[in-house]
Amino acid sequence: MTSSVTPFKVIACASLMALASSYACAQQSPPASSSVAPNNTGINQRDRSDSATTPTDQPNDHADIKVAAAVRRAIMKDKSLSTSAHNVKLVASGGVVTLRGPVANADEKAKVETIAAAVAGVTHVDNQLDTKH
Image (cartoon, rainbow, N blue to C red):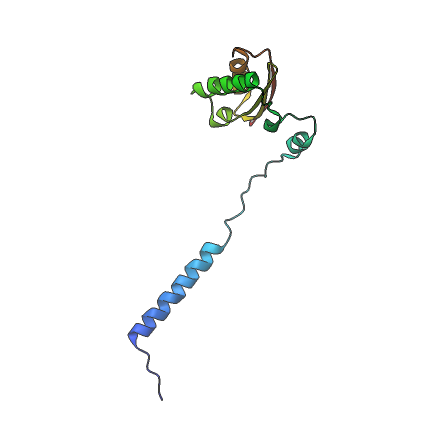
């Protein structure tokens, strides 16, 4: 029995080889970036501390929830703030608002604190925001 190679078989084989080759290329990892990876070690250690305020520390008290919601609304209302600033973590407890998370720069850090301090019911702002730059 002799095998005959038809043009269809050649084209099909070539197509499969090209497909396999392109798949293998797509599976390779992208070239490594020349920049240094960020080092969040200090922030991570700080955040693991039992004394660090986290969103789970938000009291379930109606007045505290109301203040936290008002602070969030005030921050979200300022469209000049970055997405990071709009998404800061905040905890309101007994009139004290703790702000945590990254913001774009020192000016934005100060602006978020000012916005939070201006909300009715806030007696003190604990600004623990981190700047990206």
